[in-house]
Length: 100
Image 1: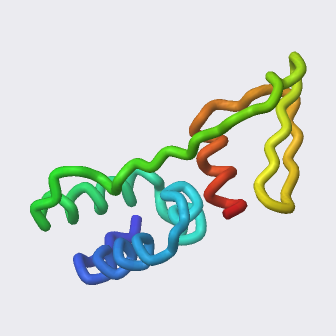
Image 2: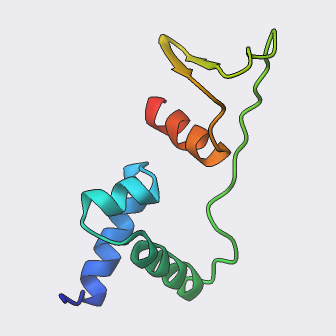
């Protein structure tokens, strides 16, 4: 098992913050466990005196008509995504970040 140095952890945390990627995507790209990245972020924030995580933002969604049973259509600009069922909110958030 390869151990990281404080300098390499700091570099990866900075790269994650600048990436705009989700924690899952960044961890996968860099061969990390998500829990490891989250631990590094938590420790870094705590040592920097940060009390809260990154700000939470919400996107208002308005629909003209409710979706037909068993189907959901998402339209973001020129992208149209059709799903058989409404996925969990975390999936929708990640999909939105990936498409925007």
